[in-house]
Image 1: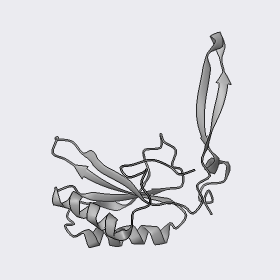
Image 2 (image 1 turned 120 degrees about the vertical axis):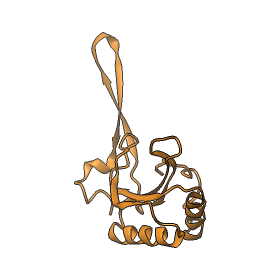
Image 3 (image 1 turned 120 degrees about the horizontal axis):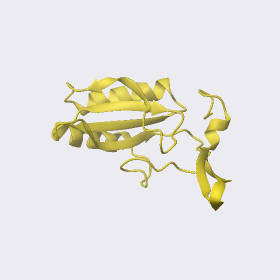
Amino acid sequence: MRITQGTFSYLPDLTDEEITAQVAYALGRGWPCSIEFTDDPHPRNSYWEMWGLPMFDLTDPAGVLLEVNECRKAYPAHYVRLNAYDASYGRQTTALSFIVQRPAEEPGFRLDREETSDRRVRFRVHPYALDRPQGDRYR
């Protein structure tokens, strides 16, 4: 199952040249970039681990791609996401976010059904990756 989070989630994985073009687009609009990674891509897990600090002073897309590649090397079996921030609204707003690396195998999710009082039915999304210990979720 392919995780569909971010701007280009329904497209095939972007090449490094396509990632560089998107970074150039973001930097051209004054949007600083940051890189995040996780081994728990649950749809409600919006707080991934940050790779370094946001690159507020970087103006060259090659520098961002260098950091993306360093994160990929350090975490080859994790999801890696690139974010671009727009502060023009007076607050830090995510203007662009997309996954730049995925694990080779994405096990997917299951839907757990629970019946509660008064015939209410609750559903919960459970990622199969959480059945394994943290750090060993993707091989």
